[in-house]
Length: 64
Image (cartoon, rainbow, N blue to C red; front, side):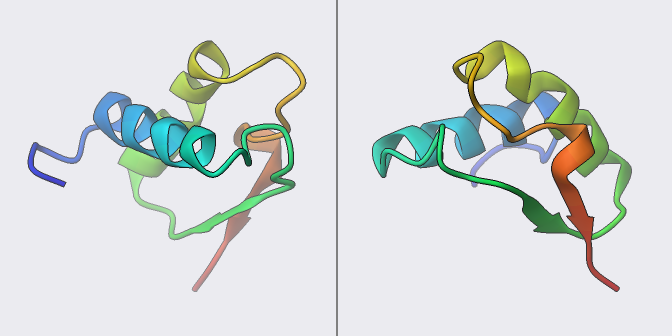
């Protein structure tokens, strides 16, 4: 990552990564800590991924 870790930037990078491996519609959850930029990232993902993607704020798995 070469820019500030904003939620929007993280969403763009994560969506690109999922798409590059063909996982955008095969991912059930995303494990991450409770940093606010992660919450914002998940809020941006529905705009970047197909409608059948399960990656969103309801599938977030918090780690401790």
